[in-house]
Image 1: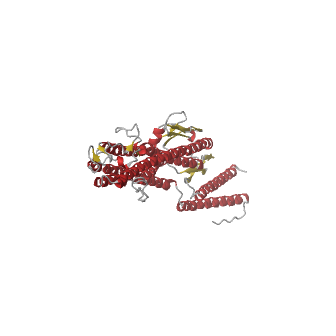
Image 2: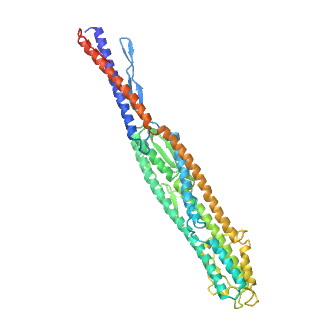
Image 3: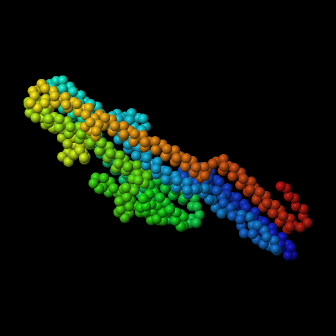
Length: 485
């Protein structure tokens, strides 16, 4: 065969290679589109796009010819910046949501109202109890020697003490429940951290230099779920791995290693520790996620509520005791204490007053309605005790005003956290929509790409057919060959 013939055959062979490569590349790209379509409803799936690379050119007889393209693999359409923003916003929104749930339960104890507008049965009637007690003193003022009026004072006092005890007990129960919730959140977070570490190993092994596709989708899903639970920070390492820390910097995952958190009781309160045994409760509280909201409610909101109740219980009990001790009872003896309080309670630190307040007086005749030295028909001291309702004996306010302001403050706090959560959820939705626009699968877009790739595949097929006819014609010189498009 002549040199020219050899050159021609070489050129045709090269063309065959180009056409074959085009068919392979188009088929691979079609497979990517088919995979996208199949996963249109798969949570966390990231859109993949075919990526192309031009093959090295070849020079034959001084002529340089292109060698087509190769489909180098699918490339996930993800944005690390957006994914990080979603995780951070998820942490913030989850924290306020968990805190709001806890505050709703606290608020329902005192007002029956919640941030959702639901009217629940009032768990205790401290406001009405205070009113009933001072109304009972007013009734005693009108009939200072009446046994029934005296018994009504003790009954009202017992109802008030019981509701103080009940409120304190329910707050303590809520704290214990939050303890358990926080420990459960850490257990869930540890399981997700283990998954992330395992995925790190798989990704670093199978796809160290490029996007890991489905494996990376799974890791991102785990990180998003982790962000709902605790505040985290991530750093991309070599070989496409990730280092994960708490928001405060405690190491949780490094490549394939996981450093799990632990919990333990200290002073009746669950505390949390990193893998080295360092306390991380404070940084988990401020870091966000469900545990941030839970711990904020447990360590800040509920203690504030307890402090307010203790101050009110201490103020009412001590002022009534002091006034009753200033008068004389039905038998002419000096009045004694109606209420008992913890021995350690003081105006500066009334801790435990709501939980331990009790009515120690059992004999209604011991109520000192009269002034000292006056007869049983005197009502001077009963009047003074009734007037305590309008005296600034609780933090510079009347008992009713103090309780009303307490309930209002609690309601305002719930409303504020609710508004914050609404704004945070809206911001999170906006970020999720941005990711959806970039990384989500659109069936319309995939259909358009499919049509384009099918046309490319058909064109490559026609080139292949044409080359086959040319080769046949070259091998059968003198025989007429017909070609139709």
